[in-house]
Length: 227
Image (cartoon, rainbow, N blue to C red):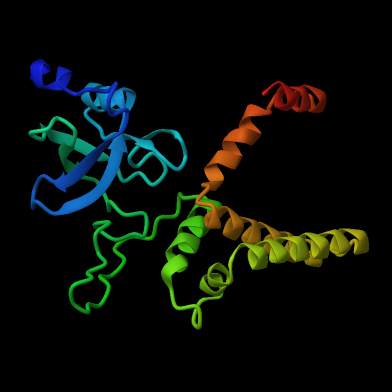
């Protein structure tokens, strides 16, 4: 290990630095992610790629949910010591869409999308749906309901959340189990659209719920006042 080069990384200046991930066998660029000192140290120690998620605001091991891990074969630091290149053995596919690489949208010429190589079943429904919602942001509003909501803006999105919350409450009052489930799904979906509008990953909501485990309602409210 070239400790001199590793020590050249100025983590005080750049707490997050970009990481280009490349297939060690064929040279294909697989993805771009970010790392901080802690996740980089884990990468060095375990020889598996670890990153820092800017949207989830936490460390993550590539493939921790999908099983599509990246075994690190070579590590390079660029001339400015502020970008890392990982050459890896990719187990499975790199992209959460099920495609080999995250770089499949060619923009300089029209091109048919490459096929989905793997259906990733271990992602949660909310995580998968959130990524789909983000992808719909730039879709044709005439062809995508989500894109039409984004085009109409915040007030329309929030109006839908309020409407769905009201319909969910009415379903509860009517004690209709089928309608309760249906309206709850609508409410969750439109809540995810609202989160997507603000680029807030639903994993942050999960983390907040986990934080509250073991706290009484009174303690939780007090903790918000103290903050």
